[in-house]
Length: 335
Image 1 (cartoon, one colour):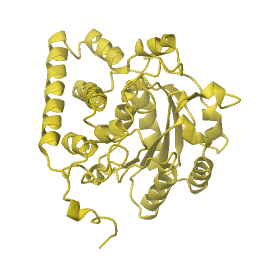
Image 2 (tube, rainbow, N blue to C red):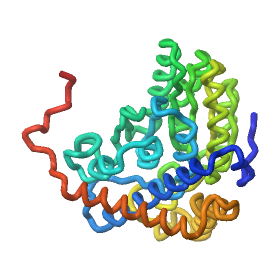
Image 3 (cartoon, rainbow, N blue to C red):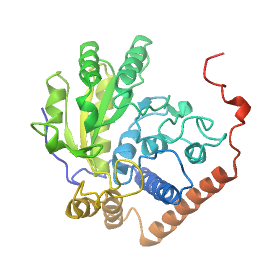
Image 4 (cartoon, one colour):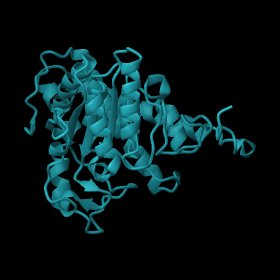
């Protein structure tokens, strides 16, 4: 059982500069999108529940960078970052959150039910842990069909307290399914800290007893996430079965909505400040500047490009029509 925490020690020398820049931009895109959505929720423009991914960007981008387009990913109620990191259309996602016909689920799903099957994201579910058995099933299907595809499922630490978690790990290990379990351990299940829910902070041990590798890594270190996932993907493609990756990270905003939960006494200002100081984007940016992959002019330019891209997506979504009320029952049943 591997339990070390990486601390920005992973090398960039084996990663092309253009890929590093792409990873940086992908994290910026997620952050900017989520910040603007938070503003829209606060203003009352977005009415559906929105679970923001701010602070966890390195996990989604690091994992998805190690995948091919046709590999599967399965998310949860906090999956804007997964959708964008896998290559989902930004405009369609924002339109979906606004309930528009041009949305990725035609305005029927909202923030928690987004889909981009064209890039390997069949859909997300608000049910805690619901993606776990779906990912295992997809992985087994890929193996039975003789493909080299893998499936990845993202879930939070709270999902490890669902019965389906254990059933999924057991079946995946028994069948040597090509699936990677990515636990985004942000320390909180809704509003309850892990220390107040579990006798021990040992989620990696839960997977290790099923006979699979279970590295525990710094989820705010995008290179640690990328390298660890790359190893897990290679192992899965070679027929050696599943891997469980515990990514230690932290969501800056509350469980749902734009607030920080400080005023509610659910967590301390000191805890939030400690994790904000470990911002995955800022630390990666500093490293790329130090190594000469980016210049300060590059950073300014790329940040402006992302700001403009997100603004254009929001404008598109705002201008898009709502679904025709006469189509309310469409897409309920398969034709």
